[in-house]
Length: 144
Ligand SMILES: Cc1cc2nc3c(=O)[nH]c(=O)nc-3n(C[C@H](O)[C@H](O)[C@H](O)COP(=O)(O)O)c2cc1C
Image (cartoon, rainbow, N blue to C red; front, side, top):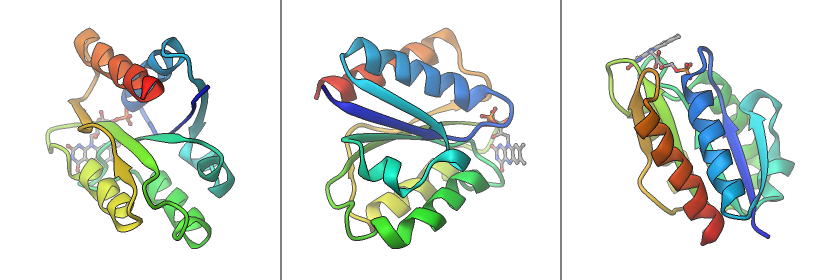
């Protein structure tokens, strides 16, 4: 059974709704799911999973500070252990598009992690269609 870790931050619930949809899809795909707010996640979590789904809102055209804080804390331990580790990313933005997700992808690329599917960015509150796409993403990563 595949172990999927979902690490996310969300101040007003939009990215959290996406995270929950990814989790539902992953569970439907037969995975075990660990869902953690970035502030509560540490290096052990990411070392102890097979796939990671990162969720970040766009705050000031960058990933949320809490998500960056997770990388800051975990990076010294994980930096040499992430090569080819599969991941996906998702998140919500106001009007400024996806630079937050891109900033996250840069860190993952830097550690040679393997992006499995295109990241999902949605504007503000996810629609039912957006949530369906997140659910499908969760299912796909569980079934790989
Ligand atoms: C502190 C802060 C900074 C933000 N900066 C941006 C920004 O630079 N660009 C943008 O598109 N949206 C920005 N937003 C809007 C959020 O990305 C948007 O409301 C998003 O849906 C929030 O997701 P959340 O509910 O998961 O926190 C900002 C919101 C906050 C609270």
